[in-house]
Length: 77
Image (cartoon, rainbow, N blue to C red; front, side, top):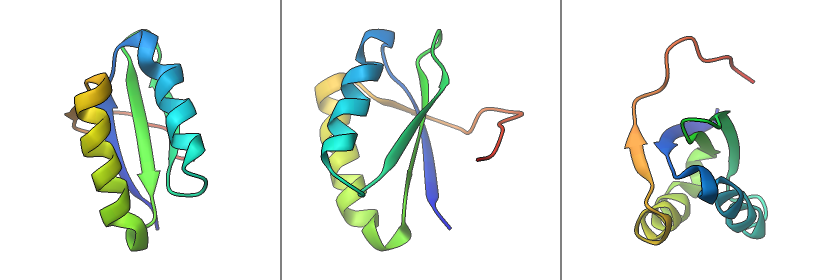
């Protein structure tokens, strides 16, 4: 089971986030929940929690991620 976190990021930084996360092949995935509001979902395997959290903390400083509660009525993958 993947651990999932939700963030708000500037709309202009959504593609930057995707590019950065894809460069860490297999560490975590990202999907855009609401592009207009900048809401994204990030998921990672529990065995990679420390690496994922370290990267997310660095990205919070770099691109200004704001952690939020899971959106209501969220479709599951």
